[in-house]
Length: 142
Image 1 (cartoon, one colour):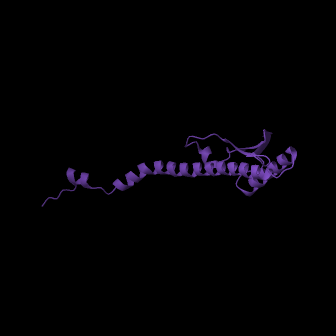
Image 2 (cartoon, rainbow, N blue to C red; image 1 turned 90 degrees about the vertical axis):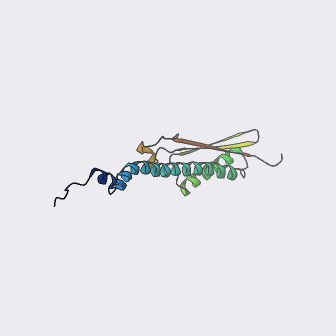
Image 3 (cartoon, helix red, strand yellow; image 1 turned 120 degrees about the vertical axis):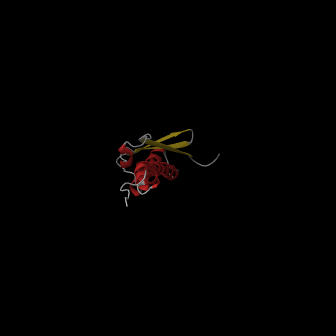
């Protein structure tokens, strides 16, 4: 009785033992890039939100100042406190206060180039300088 040592051609096409491993090897790089993108952009949006929140808090705090110099000092102190309390680095977070026509504008800039996952060059990188503004009316009345 002779037995065939090699499986028939149709039987080898039906054998799917290694198919899952090959599919996983093809899909893994795409899934990793997707997860890294979610994490990197999530961190970027968190920093952008904190910059906007720092500008909002500074503008609200500055309303209580009696004159332009005091309002500017209060706003800058508020931005520094917000940066220290959150994930922003106070050294690279800058603020600017301007007054015109009974409006106070607080501008906060933060260099987001230190976000590690965006340095991987796997993804398109958004603008690294995040700049946000908040405007409030000075004084009572309409």
